[in-house]
Image (cartoon, rainbow, N blue to C red; front, top):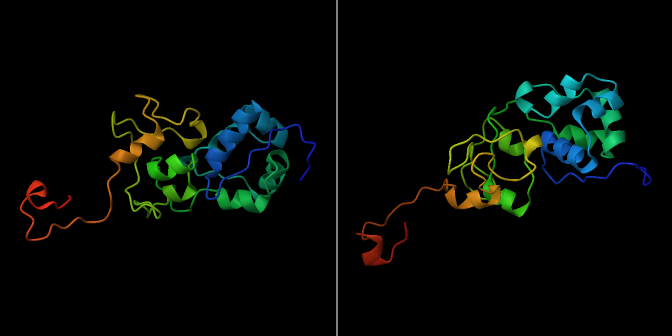
Length: 181
C-alpha cells in the first residue's frame, strides 16, 4: 500500500472487530462518518451502520475495496473483521483480553459465545459496578464505562470464571482447611 498517504495508518489487531477498527481509524485521522461516506460515495447512514453490528449492514465487496484504499488494509482483512452472521446484539467484552490488548474482538459478539476462549471467563455485557450497558465499540475512545468511568481492563476482577468450582468433601470451610473457593 502507499507509504505517502495523507492518513494516519491504523493497524488492525488480530481478531479486532470491524466497528472498533473503524472508530479507531476515524479518531486517529479526525474524520467523521460523513467524510468517509463522501470519500466512498455512499450514504453517511451506511457508514454509521457499519460501525454498529446490530444494524446488520456490512460494506459490500466493492465498498470494502474502496474502503481498503482509504484505510490501507486489504479488502480480505476487512472482510475477516466483519461481525459474525449469528450475532449477540448487546456489546460484550472480556476484560482480561482487553487489559492485554485494548481492542474489541469480533469473536466476543458471536451469538453462541458466552465465555472467553483464552481466559475461560464469562463475557461481560455491562459494567459490573453500575450496570450500564457497553457502547458500540466504535465509540470506545476512553476505554471505560461511559457512566461510572471504570476502565474496561479493571473489570477483570469482576468477571466470573466459567469453570465450576467443586469443594472437596473434607473441606468444612476455607479458613479451617486451607481450601480456596
